[in-house]
Length: 273
Image 1 (cartoon, rainbow, N blue to C red):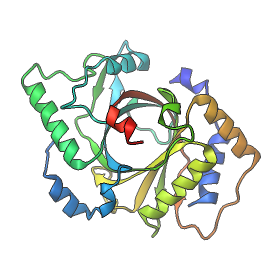
Image 2: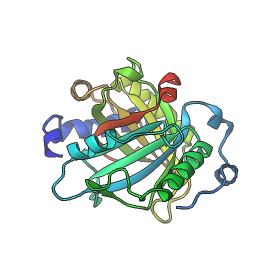
Image 3: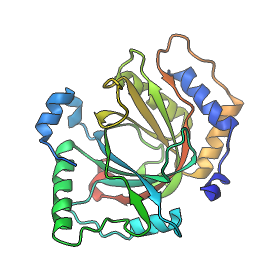
Image 4: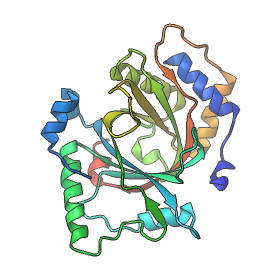
């Protein structure tokens, strides 16, 4: 993590990003129909920008590095029957909190139904073999997962192909304080336009801290086209700070900065963006 940390602007740029957010905006499988009923998911799920993220935290085994993890993951043979539409690994550079893990493994699906189908096929395939995990040997991932609804709210100005396979990602957890997910999506979209990034919000779903009310918070993720673009965007924000908006109810924590590695991307995901 130290090598990546040397490539980015620290401290003041991170705080300025928080100021800008506050200123411009404040393993059981179940039937997908049941999930929709429980969550009260709106008709927006029919849109291609809405989907599901399945997240696990992982630790790197002794003797290996994040480079070994990424190389191993990228060497995995994905089949059409089991592959998510997008797989990412996030390795913290300047991380909020003290979670006891080294990286996050995230698989994205276009719908709950697709996730159920792909996960069922994958589990059946493992049952017919030796059950080894895709990262067996180089990393150990928790069996407990978090599932989040995911909405893409902004595309990279240069298109999907402009985002490098290894790039900078900023992420902040926001308390809605009475605002809606739609409000959070609009606010994240506005910030992404200023930063020149792709952006998404993640919310609801299953798993997480006890006592958290459904849709009371949302996480905003911003994907820069490259580390160089991250540096330029942070410098621009430092030179033009934005005053907080007292009428904006949404409050966001100081962001985390990670190196995001694209492991797998399906052809259908590319064509739908």
